[in-house]
Image (tube, rainbow, N blue to C red; front, side, top):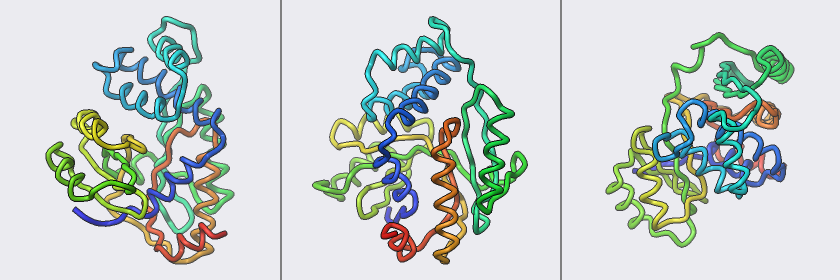
Length: 250
């Protein structure tokens, strides 16, 4: 169990440093509402809601706000009807993109996403054009500081996780979907959890070793991430450490 998760953690650090708290909260509350609508308001019987609540609480969303979002999903309170849509496409350097959106107006959202992709060196693809290259996986991040790698590895193996990788700042633990919540709960009793989510992990990656292409890709990624309707973005980019360092210094 060894390796690195460079760009994934770069993206997470950017998200963690995002000062637009209201926008982050809005996206998380949309996810809570949809999760409650699809699987009910009991987090113990609704793994998707349980995962959404983990992220909401880690972002310090007040409990009464969370409860209102759940009630909107279950129909106890009136709310906007959201639809979930996953868009597939490509960014600069032929990087595959999976874009998860939640919207009350599909026509508006697809038009805006197509515009952003086209303007910044990408394109919108057909359904199934890139999804085949991704696997649904649970991801848990634990800060490296003051953590014994050997002790954590032993606990990760005991919990039944699939893999553990170490980056400069985080241990990244991957799990299958069925055991994600149980493993998260087990590890959270002993370790500080920085982030826990269900993600799409690429089977193959596309290397971007050109700074100009990497800059274009990161700009597009940030614009998509900032879009009100876009909940999550996954990609299969592989940006070398030296390019990442240059991006971070710019």
